[in-house]
Length: 297
Image (cartoon, rainbow, N blue to C red; front, side):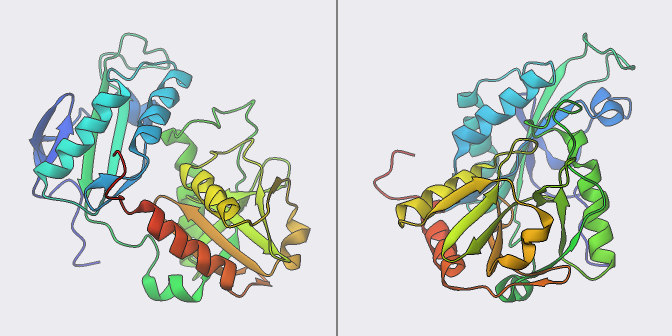
């Protein structure tokens, strides 16, 4: 870890409340409500060749996540899209990860914080594959998580809210300490849900099966991959998947902005062999995220 570059101590610029500021000066107070009470929403996005893939969808989801948490992000989707472009340009980035985040400020401290100012920042940085390439190509090893995705009656499951990722960090760390790349989470009913930061697909007899996202995010990448598969004439079944079915599938892969499309080789004792369908979707997704010259970006 000696070569680790901390995120607070880097060169460049961050878009902060409407203007670009030097990276090291993009700070907030330690008593910000977002830090203490997780009143923050964010997006994870990737830019390819200078264009953020599905930028408008991400911007609209960020704004909607804020509304569900009870606050209005003080910028329109169009303004958010421009802020991302300005941030990438200021940092001379074309292929990168982009992180918009909105949070409640430090005007009030306590559960009630309706008078707090809503802040927005956008950062962008070089970030390659979410998983090491060698590991990714041969398929990831996953373990089973202990924590479960919560009942949507107990948490705002349809938001990309900071607080919902606390159990994901716990499970990701637990998996890594045990020698795995990630963990598969069940939902509160015991149904297969997702991994700590990516949706999951399974293949059986040429048909794709994926858990119904009724208590976790219906990811933008997930929807993209479903569209690509159906364009190929593949059948996609969105349904409840039980843990006892894990042994019945031949292929498995994860999808997400960070993970893109990544094969899985095993989940605990269940083994999978990355095959033709997964390979096809990796190539199709790679082609889809590249800006087309004639597309109206």
